[in-house]
Image (cartoon, rainbow, N blue to C red):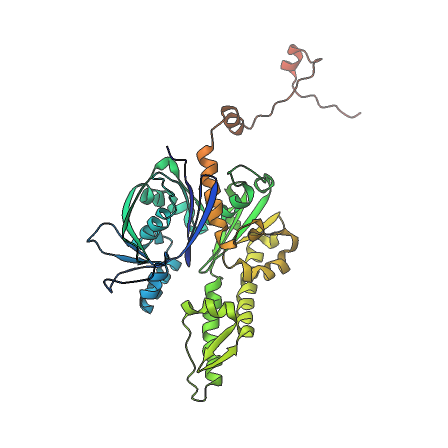
Length: 398
């Protein structure tokens, strides 16, 4: 019998991040979150494993996934897919979600066909849709995948009801920090104190405040201030900037999907010349970062009753300075715990899979948790008769 494979699958707005553990070793994988139909027929690529194609069986419609899908899609497809994913709490109903889940999970199986899997939903969608998501993922998955110029290969696995867990995305980071690499409790303090996890992503920022594993709804919400807003501002400002340096006053439009590279480099190439636009990038990040922190500051009642604020997600790095300025020593940065911030949820989901699959209910603990009675000792000098007549004696002042 194969050893169990634990998988944390974090399908986000920009990318799908997967972490698995098999035979004591952890593996991580990133796939750009994009799926489009194959409309170009036969393709020949070098053996790049990131060039992924999917089909259910030979002769069925083929789909491009990840980097290949972005390269082969039109701007209208990119816009439509990202818009639906950003604004729909039921994105998981789309065929693209199912394909991406199958491909990303299947590539991490390490020979297992019954993995233990944890997935996550955004804060505002978790309560309403977790059961529906379970129903859509439970069952047998059978399909074929082609990577690079390698031949098609069949992948089959089964998600059993007892091997699937759905939690909220920010809570996954809590488990990343609170559990050790074997899924055992490492930091009990995080479950005793009131903690706010701020999961800053590409399209949205999920703010979830917890006491133990209980969500404090009043201080949990999804904010629209995210990295997408930075790119939207930057796109407008780069058009203005290039118009200002263009003798013909035409300028150049930079699609949002092309901006991550520009943000990293701080440079653009325009009509044969390279221009430093790092100040424009910094100003766009500052404007969105300050707006996000101000919203969080108000919604969390200034953080007065919160012990820790955990910062996680792919956009946590550029927005970290604004959080540090406002919340100071309360801030915990997920990346300080040994893994890239964008993989913190996936790592936490993987650890959570381990912890739940090994959990054995303890009868005494369950009974203790179900009662509010408190044990106490009756003084020896109280007789049974006296105790029946008068349980409480209050001295009077003369």
